[in-house]
Image (cartoon, rainbow, N blue to C red; front, side, top):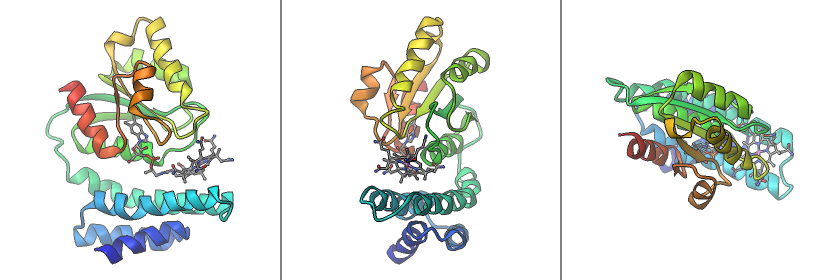
Amino acid sequence: MQNFLAQCEEAVLKGEKARAVDLAASALDKGYDLLEVIEGGFSKGIRKAGELWEKGEYFLPELAFSAEAMKDAMEVLQPGLLESSEQSRTKGKVVIGTIQGDIHDIGKTLVATMLAANGYNVIDLGADVAYSRFIEEVKNQKPELLCMSALLTTTMAGQGHVISQLEEGGLRSQVKVMVGGAPTTAAWAEEIGADGYAENAVEAVQKANSLLI
Ligand code: B12
């Protein structure tokens, strides 16, 4: 298994799309634990690519190739993640998106997939979602939970902004709010008045369960 995870990591790190997709398909065939494959393999590769970029050893196109390889592999794994789920009942409606000005969507999509796999009805708004759109969707969709992702220190403030707008619009008490993304923390969630924070997709499901059930 370690060798397989190392191959997944390397395929993403080197931006080898076809290899990443083949590895994802073979993880499904072999019945591997898909979360282990994502966290212990593919995700490690994308984070390492980010570190190399930070050190100036990778340039943006290389980082983008790695991200594409990661996204393609995730697309292959998604049906498998959803299949192993308990979808018999709906635990609640969730609206999720990455905040305005931020195009990072890999982690957000993984959280959305895991929530769906665990019985939530998930409406994924995508990335770079305007503050006003989050408010509109809360008004119209009436979700039990709003999830906002931010990967940039410059965009994380937007999560607080949306919460303030929910308060101003008299909508705050109708919906629980959960935030996440690499620069965010539990202390940040508390500071901006969110109900919850989670460090990864598995914890996000646990947190959602504890908030809603
Ligand atoms: C891949 C990547 C990209 C890809 C994104 C592709 C895509 N479609 O998503 C590309 C190449 C496009 C990109 C662009 C940029 N990037 Co970038 N990127 C990354 C990188 C390497 C990995 C992110 C990732 O996908 N991780 C894998 C996933 C699985 O993990 P995750 O996102 O953390 O999500 C998990 C948790 O955080 C959590 N989670 C996430 N969301 C949520 C939401 C909720 C509600 C909850 C509960 C939990 C949760 O669960 C997830 C699953 O476990 C990070 C480095 C890093 N270490 O994060 C830099 C990073 C985020 N990028 C960075 C930067 C600066 C940029 C650019 C501004 C670069 C530029 N000069 O153009 C642009 C952004 C443009 C914009 N306006 O958004 C910086 C941010 C620095 C900062 N502190 O603000 C980072 C940290 C790199 C670095 N070390 O400097 N990037």
